Image (tube, rainbow, N blue to C red; front, side):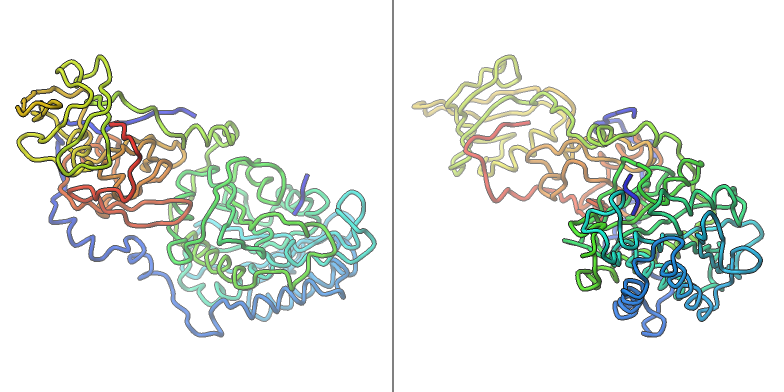
Length: 537
């Protein structure tokens, strides 16, 4: 590895929908749910045969060969680098991948004896000019190291087991797997193993100046660099903002692996995906993170998480296969250039809380006889109606109050004036007070905003305390993908559905690249823990 927005918030509205989906359509969805997962799994090839599937044993064999001392650190232009390239060609030939380099060879030569290795799987089912998916990673490393590319000690073999023998091992197994599926592919796959990456992305930059396929035919680039040190199931994916819907595309393929994905926004020229992005071609990089052995002789095979390498490679298998079925291509998004980590924080940040609808605090300890108020906020509906500290609210709309959570939920959702039954300290009488709440009702208690890179996805920006959304476990920065198996076409449509569809209402939610079903129920479940005082939001 070479080292070197508009913001909008939406609240639920109470306008009647012009057209609502039939609830009967949605009920069976909950039973079949594992959503799009079920639909996609039905179409994805299944290979349980160990000769066809991707296994940790095969991956480890490749890493052990490439990270062996005999290759002397695979420095570009050296005998060790050439020997590593020879191993790649031997594997690709054996699996039937066609040469895609110069003069009907597997090589593209450049500079000082450097050479990229290229092989292609021409899709049998692909129509003319259907596009190409480039799957790539660098195979060179830093040899014995020097003061400009090693963190020392120098003069010893830097085998680069993680950087990038791990990525190359994954690519080789992807090539072997996909070669068996060419009859089902709708796009061709070009595998490129870069040389000279450690010297400044030389191989990828050279290929872009001397492409072996027309650049306008490259739909998507998937770069794999250092995927052998998976820790706590955390995977970094860079570049998903270079095309629309890429984050969702990756997440939907992660439904089986359930790796925790950190979608990195900041892009720098740190690996071979970057030159493609600069050329206006969507590209992603998959990476399990830097570590203390990076560019040191200690980056050895025994330190790799081989089981994790298998998990990441299997995720890549699903992503590449699905990309080869993606007939419409991937639309490049130039706005990534203006986006920073600060942009991400702003987009995913919690929105400001709306004014309280009632304006009271109560003792959440003993609610068996009602809610004992401990404060009433001035100039809000409760104080204007005459509620006072130490008042006991015993009923809401004639219903006895013994549940703090249900009271909160009622305040959030009522659209008409409420009637509170109130008892003053040391007074036997119960008074009834009619109170008109401020603000709009929130049936589920969430607000959201759009992501310009992911149209049709809602980012949760606030979850009201005591709401159905809070009871279901929704959090700020969760992304809503589907409601009862359906995707919305506008924020107004999403608002209509959330306001008017009956419960239970299943949502497909993404959190850190993992999908889960969250069900909004009719009544919130009382929280397990209460704060000593509770503010009504």
